[in-house]
Image (cartoon, rainbow, N blue to C red):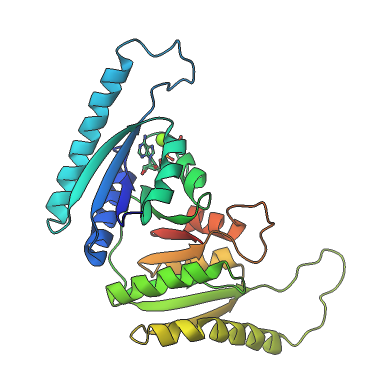
Length: 283
Ligand SMILES: Nc1ncnc2c1ncn2[C@@H]1O[C@H](COP(=O)(O)OP(=O)(O)OP(=O)(O)O)[C@@H](O)[C@H]1O
Ligand SMILES: [Mg+2]
C-alpha cells in the first residue's frame, strides 16, 4: 500500500469540506492527496435506462467535479501534491475498495442526494467499519479550531487502533487529547435498582482508563492527556465532547458489539450526532 490520503467527492458542500480536511491532514503527515469521484454507469440499476451518450456526459460532469476539487485543494494547500482520479462503478463498492488502498479515506457526512433533515448519507454507513482502515467523515460547517482531539475509550481491544490514531493526530497537531469513557447504571423496568457503591464503580472505570492509556502516554510523552470518565451514555458523552473538539476518534466497534456487527452502535451514534469530524478506525 502506498501511503496517501484519499478524499472522495460528489461535488457537494460536505465533500468539499472533506477535500479541505484531507488536504490539511496530508500536509501534516507529508503525504500526497488523491481526490476521487465515482461515476455510476448504470444509475438506475437497469441496463436499458441510461441513454447511449450517458457515460460520456457523466464522465464529463465527473471531470468537472474533480477539476473544481483540485482547484480548491491546491489553492488552500499549495504545499500538498494533489492528483485526481475518475473511477467508473457503483459508488458504495468503489469507495469501500478505496478504504483498503489508502492510509485513510475522507468523505463528507452528506452528499448531493438524501432528504431534507438527513444527518448522514448512505455512503458513510457503507464504508465506515466495513473494511480494515480509517474513514474520516467531515461535516460541511467546519467550526473554529479548539485545540483538542477526543477519543472514545472502552475496555475492548478494538479501541487500540483508535488510540494509536488519536495520539498520532494529537501529536501532529500539537493538541491536547481528551480520552472519554462513559459507563451507565443498568436500567430495569420492574425491579428496583441493584444497590451498589457508585463511587467504587466509578473508580473502577477510572482505573481501567488509566491502565488503557499507560503505554500510549509513555509512547507520546509530548501529548497532554485529559482522562474524562462520565456516568452517562457513551454517544451522549462523545457528542457533548465533540462540541469542543477538532476531531472525535472511535473504533469501529467495542465491547458490546456482537461478532457479526461491523459498526458498533456507539460509533454509529457518534457519526450521526457529532458536531465535527469523526474518524472511525478499524484494526
Ligand atoms: N459518486 C461519488 N463519488 C465520490 N464520492 C462520493 C460519491 N457519492 C458520495 N460520495 C462521498 O460520500 C459522501 C456522502 O454522500 P452520500 O451519497 O452518502 O450522501 P447523500 O448524497 O446525501 O445521500 P444518499 O445516500 O441518498 O446518496 C459525500 O460527501 C462524498 O464524500
Ligand atoms: Mg449521494
